[in-house]
Length: 497
Image (cartoon, rainbow, N blue to C red; front, top):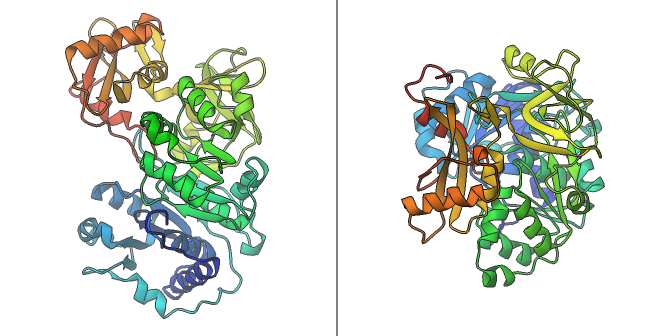
């Protein structure tokens, strides 16, 4: 653990995971059964997860930022038979106690409350030997809910013997990012998110060291790279922005020369941000575009990106199809919905309609994103389809304006959305969180609009700016635009005025 310095050896991790798997089996849970857990970045998070994996369970790690209602929904929707949490979440655990009628195993770390048993006491009586005939488990993580009620995402794979199970992420870590058993992987993001959880587990499979930050802080992150001599790490573009906004003296005080691969994903990265990061860290920055669904993987390294600035890469385990509204592929260079062919199959748990809506008649699958492919086969994201703004019949993808406004020195965070306009249906609005020490004002709003118009066509730029103390972001860096849009569209029965 980066802050506390607590160390768990591989032997200790394996022993505790075996105890967890033995406990689950003793409680009657069989391979294919579902479990849910909600923890902060806790030292026991990864041993617990490996225990579920050893037991062949389908495990759902939940965001520690969820409301009680959201947690209750996921526990019920997933069909979880066990729920594990920590004293950190005790208030919500108390509220959940009467909302989990089908959960028979209820454990809490670091203390207990009524209705929950002690995790530490429960596993203490279990053997550290592995179960017999082990079947590999699988995660079923829920979408962040940025475009609606979250759904569990589960791969469509037949059960496989644990010793024969292939860990796809460990293969990527080795082949693309040069990771071996000598690596030090620094994980700054919440472990309940797909990429941090899978990358940490993939690092374990390789036999390398994982360093987990309790929480992300830009200066603390740089200090952790230097302290632990991290060789590999994964971030989201928001973290790049936070680091670039640090004073130069703070940035230069920390040695990041140990880094061999810094991987980013989860959201489009503004070109100017990535240019500055490559200039600062060197050509160690890698990018990929993929989803929790695992249906495709698009990748580029620094050299590939410098030759195709703005790209998220080329497909390496699949092929891409860019599809128009009529369901037919568009011409090269034109925008459309991105479909993958040849990646892993998946389904949305308990939602056949949502699963079907992600499929093309030819069997391809989509995450719902919009993009285009250039003449060299590189993919460029334009936006999530659900966030497209239609103003006066013109399609506007707000990511472009967000990328510009993010780089303004007085902007800390920004979201660009479509809001009602009686003449055009929608108009473009930016919601801005100002940088520390900056006062919001009408004058600043006008300055930001003018700044955007220096770089983009007027139609793509916000007509107005609203200021907020904080934007609703997932800890992984993903923006909850739905929450903002719902505020502005309250009272409207339709998106058509």
